Image 1: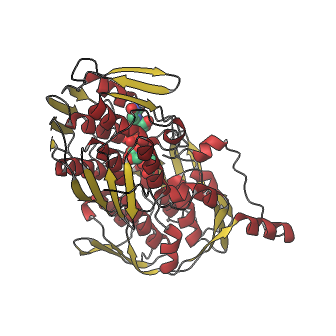
Image 2: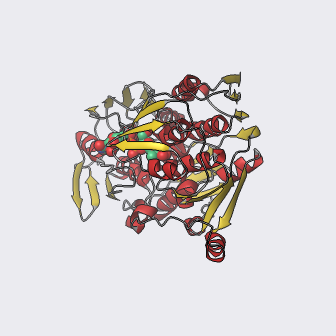
Image 3: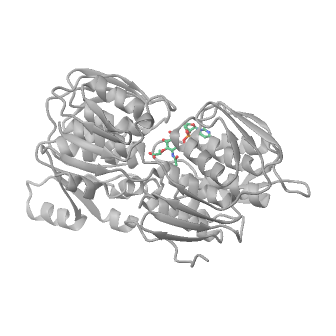
Length: 469
Ligand code: EPZ
């Protein structure tokens, strides 16, 4: 029996709000960094545990604010959870309510994906709409249309998506679904819903991200019948119920990519493990194009060598196996120091170039027009106070701070802590001069020393600051 110990708090957002990262740049890194479990797998697999009529044990669960948040959503539904280190035990035998709490779901988009498992298990679900966030409008129309194709009645009222399955069995029906966009979330929501549906479901133009495959493998470990995950056509044959399982989450390819860029931007040699090199193919290919040598040291281990020069290179973000949008911001920081002009086209999200103006604060030369950034490489960056407006933007500013001459102060850690498991601690262990300090300390310094530059103010609404991706 799992006692209701709940989840330990990753750095709470209030702590993150009241602290900043102070970075003295221009130092090389060295050594080995351990890559944590994948955020975008852990979140949806935790939602997937709602499908199980038994207990699940997940391993390699990252310590992230978002994991804590989705744990709170599951607890509110009556699920019992217990985390010990990177092991999470989930008991969803009893789901007490089909109604997810508004204040929690609107803080974490990924919790909306739980509408699939709840509807599949209970035949009814009330899920608040997640709303937009800093990087885009983020509609969920594809999720809703797919559930309707499987026989659900869906009404959106007062910001809540009310779904139920008519008929005595209250069971979803298999269906053929074509996704207009290869959406990760819609593929995951519908794949989960189809595992307990009556009959066969085919999802066409499905997302092929490694996290989608990881979720499918988790469901298969619980007894689901899923074929073709990782391709653009996924077939699911519904089963009456799913059983307990133990599952290990894949390493985080975006965290690994971020450390590869940290090595490149500081001209350092680093060793990263565990990683799944195939998951990083578009990232490694782009780094080699820029002039960064990367060696596969072992099946789950990569080594970067110091890059002589960084060459300009163009990027277009695309669904997997194209170049991942979550790596766009870190690469913009790197290309800001490359020789020549690079063009970055962000084609997945409509508002994901806000870090460009903050990188320009550090001396970069980037112009943005619509969804395209024109990056003219500069010989060096110089430290300054900057503000991260979303998860990957914050990471890009940390990376730029590692390379910049002098001191950089990064605000917006509430974003960083959502998706990176102790990034600053890991960088410190690699020799970075980086410290998490109270905002008050910086402000006191500003007040006592007029030469110290004032910190930028967000100017953003509170909501934008709290909404997680
Ligand atoms: C997932 O978001 C990830 N989040 C994102 O990671 C990632 O950037 C994104 O996939 C793309 O790879 C999680 O897995 C929790 P989408 P998701 O549905 O599923 C449009 C990070 O930094 N769309 O693939 O929400 C949508 O607006 C985060 O870790 C619709 O129009 O992304 C976007 O333009 C950020 N209607 C595009 O599709 C829908 O119903 C791709 O979104 C659904 C999506």
